[in-house]
Image (cartoon, rainbow, N blue to C red; front, side):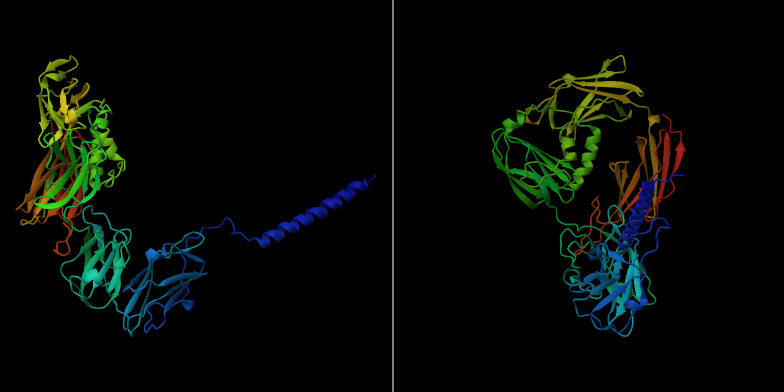
Length: 599
């Protein structure tokens, strides 16, 4: 067979080239190592190498730094906030990472004969899978022994009952009342995500106890908006006294003050307060003869409505009972420009109104003093109301409530038409403005169950602020049957007769459906009737000062925050009765249903 010399040469060149590229690939792989793929995922957190690290529980410590060497490469996550040293130091230490070693260098002279606990929290992680060395802690003593006592407990938000995380719990050996304002604690720990804490290696003694939301990180109670909790009587820590601490944290119960003001719109000023302004008043100073005003409280805010065609500015005096809170020079926006917007009286959407009621309590959507516009959000929905088109549902024993975007000064009953059933038979209803709520119009009648109604409010039926009136308004609603609703029979035990309690029934949105008070008994029973189907909870406030509302803490007055407990109830269904039995202070009970409420 004749062989092609070109083919032999070509094959030889090809093989040499292939070998060359294979060598390059192998060399490249050696020069650029990559983690191996496949295999089992690493779930093991970094571990400490004892021989290369500062020993735990070391006595007679004289060094100015501690070192922790790990068995793999690590990284630090949020070390500044996670690190807690007890007792606290005057100067923050330096924390450094080099390879597998974390070094903490002290910038203070350590106290003699003192046990120190250095808590790293969850700051150390491996670099591959972020496995955390949880609750990393090192303890040492500058003396000849390690203090061995401890205490633990939990911190909760006083009003909501939710766990309070990243809160400092502090122990002071001094019993001086002002100690929390001027000195760092003897021992400190930080709560975890569940609000739990543990302070270990404590010396036997008697301590003042505080919990603090330390916003500026100086271990002192020195900011007005820092939350605080405390125990009035000293905590005794000894070999025989083992006590778990429960603390309720809140901002202090301070005097009523204005947080924000929004006066951008003619005819209305919104004042947001630090708490409910139910006893506050707003008074114009030397108002003109054509001045008209109305004060409306909405949760933690006041809407101050006013109208005066002749006024460019006016002084307002804000008082709480007899005490003056503030004065405000109100520069009145243009009334003419306001009225040119063709503003008309409209119905508020029930869903939006409910959301706004929650938002106003926290001050959301309010602008700062002098701002050109509010912060937006739910307040805008509240004010920019639109007509309601959907069919409403009404209990046969309740009136129809219509909420408007402006206060109603008067109305013409001749321009109201109420039609019954699909035959549109006109019936005569009763109409009133709700007491203390001028934006709410009440329509009542001897309703027939399972019947549809139509309310027609003809143009110019309503005379509202600024001389505004309404266009045609149509409200369709169905009066349901009593069988469409349920009830809750509520029984509360384990009460202290000398104490006062406030019970609030909450719907699924957190809105208060009904509120009652009780005192003088160790047991209380009530019925919450005519409830729309849905989920409900009961909030119980231990009203220590008997003022009918919840009060936060006041340290100088030695008044801890009032205790609040929240109990979920079973779902209310049509024609069913939920039996809610609660022993105050215990976890939620086991409510039962009773069928057949009937009509």
